[in-house]
Image 1 (tube, rainbow, N blue to C red):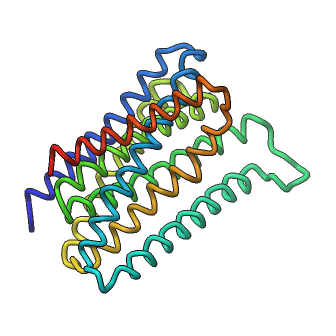
Image 2 (image 1 turned 90 degrees about the horizontal axis):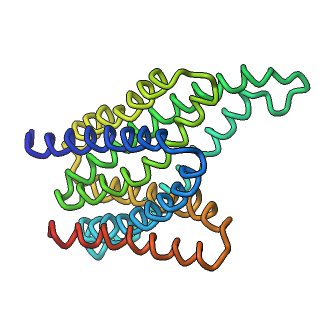
Amino acid sequence: MNVHTLLWILLATLLGGLLSAALASLFLLLNRERRAHLLPHLISFATGAMLAAALLGLLPEAVAGVGPGRIEGIGAALLGGIALFFVLEKLVLWRHCHTEDCESHHLPDDHHRDRAASWIVLVGDGVHNAFDGVLIAAAFLTDLRLGVVTALAITAHEVPQELGNLAVLLHAGMQPPRALLFNALTSLTSIIGGLLGYFALQGTLDVLPYAISVAAASLIYVAVADLIPGLHKRVDPAGSAMQVLLIGAGIAVIAVTETLLG
């Protein structure tokens, strides 16, 4: 057992979970207009950070891990990962719709729909964060630098996501202290995922390059399928220019981090 690597995994998942939940909570102190103004900027930054972590860090490391003769396997793992996350997202969307009886003629009232949505958000976010922990563990088992870069990219994405989760919980009528507590607890499921990933992957190091490819697929899918379409809703020149700058800033942070740790 590599205790040093395990400690890094625990530290990264703990700090990442607490930091994302804490920053999201601080946003509640801002008024609605200010939050609406800042959130797209956070998403732009997260987009750049996630794409850079996947394409500049994770994928090159995965290719190097298998050697030139088995690169097709990395491509297949990347493709399979993207397909997996597409299906998982479809299931989450279907479950959300099914709970709200989207196709029923007898719709529940708004209060019941909001409460159902809040619990779906909590369960879904807990599972999502646990899987993020597995990805972080796979990255740290491959390389310390890669683990730090992956943790940074995932945390950058989690801040706007946790803010959205808080908004759903509060809209459902949950009291702010209770909403903050539940949101923090779901953020910390990444620690469980990190532990599971460490013990599951440690004995199968040959699988690590392919696990890293799936981690890259996760970051690419979220950035391209979930974040970028929202950015395209803003088409004014000034807003578009700011998006490009912040995406570039996200890429730069990951590139600088890799350089410093390399």
